[in-house]
Image 1: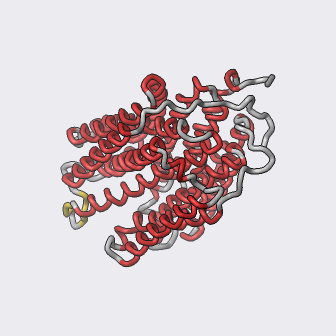
Image 2: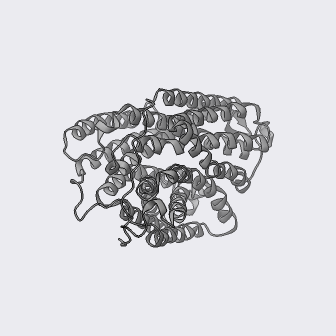
Image 3: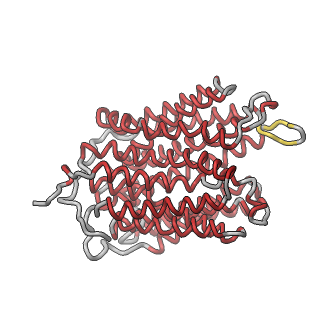
Length: 482
């Protein structure tokens, strides 16, 4: 008999806390440089166009690395790959802290993006380590860590940028990443055993093909407004992305050990959950673009609230924290009614938040309330997605399936950034010789967010109401360290 069967594992709470912290730290990297955007060209002696790659590099590397980390986690062990994922977080933060020009900064930010595989790996590891009755709330908390990290990153980085050297941001990020690595190594047990040899071979052509397709797609989406949506470069990248995705799909269906098992992802429960994930990712990111701008625009515009970067971050932080505080509520709803219902309810709550924002634009407290409602819905939806995915895939594919789902959310966020950027760039006012987004533009953006959230609810309602596959735990979590 094992000493500590998972049903009575005394450190279940500690394991959940450490994995949630890992997710928060990984997510902080996404908003770490937001307060520096305007200063980056001067700090790095480069153009604004080149400096924008400091953000784009993280987006691209995260999109490519996330499905790869998931597949390697299924093959070599999720805890092992989670530890491996902390290495580029630490290294990238150190490289950024030591950078004085744009190229090493872009390299460092790219390394930070590689560490984003931590979140789906952590979610999948929870399935191996926790008993069924604790799994739902733990998954919800882990999923919410992405929103909490993004929300905390803004006030933290704004405070450091205002009162200390910008390099301190990256040294602190390196220290937090190192802390996560130490805690994972000491607190988190090895999950489901993978044996001495990996199951199957790593699909290198599939990884390269998907990576090339994602880079082409996200480059076109993220840089299209700069290059021109009708430019040869943008259209060429979109065409290349489509062609590469088609070729990649054919390869994945024919290869013995695919990076992503498309036959599993084609199951209605997985397919529709991923479709809803794209829409929720879009809706989540829309308000994170609209609300900060409204808070910071000058009061003289008639609708701006004149807040500093630091104040804006503090006004946004409670909404991110609400995701984690309310995560257990979503888990209880999923346990009572099923994760499909939680996903639909969460999407409807997001739509309600956007609707309320139409009436609350004129005050900081009003925007705080609207953000709280939106992020409550995001927390409910994000907690339900992994439960739906893991209820429909075999245990040995949970990491790759969750990673693919996380990728779908990221694609939704990237498309949202492009769409909202176009809307706000087209609907502007002239303010002392500067073109600023108009109030009408913000209201249209909020309407789009509401409509997309309602579409996510409709997709969630169409998910088959099948009983989730039973969550099985290993006989005992291994105590050996990687």
